[in-house]
Length: 363
Image (cartoon, rainbow, N blue to C red; front, side):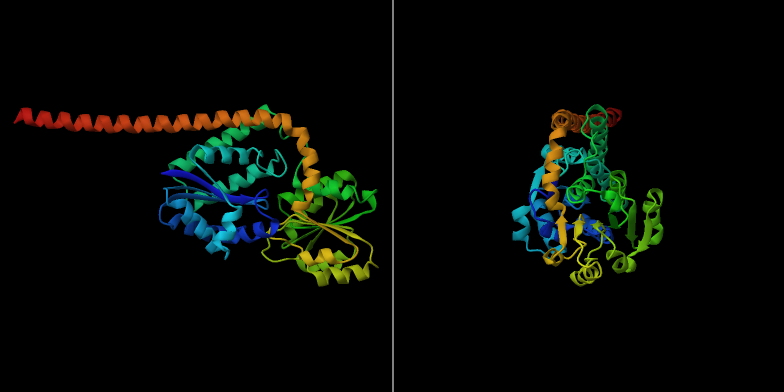
């Protein structure tokens, strides 16, 4: 059997393709069940974030095409189109890729810590779906140990660099005085929590968090002196917002062109800075065509992120060395397990021969 890692990410696919291939939280359970039930697939896990969708499987030689075909079918995407932006790794290369992802070496923001938490969530979901067997279970556990070592022994995660931080950095180039800016944050996940914290530290004091449930929005906003609202209240809040940053798991846009147009009229066309971090997108792309709106997606944050990458390059080299050692350790573990299996088979065979000879002698 072969270890396979197959997926797309921010380097190989546009945000338009990534949002088509992303799995929503409600889709993951059925997706894992379908993937696990495919022929030639014995183990499976799914990692889906705003910047990547990756499938980790234990399969045979025929499995790669089967997995690719299934991914296209699941998202109603032509396999040929998907194949143009998909990458695949096998065995030790797949293990190396997973470890690089876990420590943030393959992220848009070098060394960002959120991906490790997302990977742990993917691992738990795969376990609950009974998608993990011996090989993937060992690989994930070893990957988490390597990630902990990298965080402990290198400075790759010291500086506050993330997509959330990059969004706030870009906003600071437009607003000279954050203290007079009114910010509307849509969503209440980890990314929005980081955005809220960075905005507060930058001087924003008028902060509104909108979420499907008011309770969760209050958890994010209360410690920062902000206001919590529900999604239906967004149109009223939008007319007061100078900064809008959105990151939800909604499969459909939350802000449409018409809603934003009506808010701009009430604002007397005072400009609005918007960042859509979500994949699929929360803000309709047509909003960018409106005067007085400056709309950016995660792909537009690349320049800000690249500036921050340079501060982590030295630590990244150290991390690469630790990953290489981690891959070698994992391969050694597999070889040791193979040796144990061979010895067990040898002992069982010897015992069968002994018993047969004993029985013959007794007769």
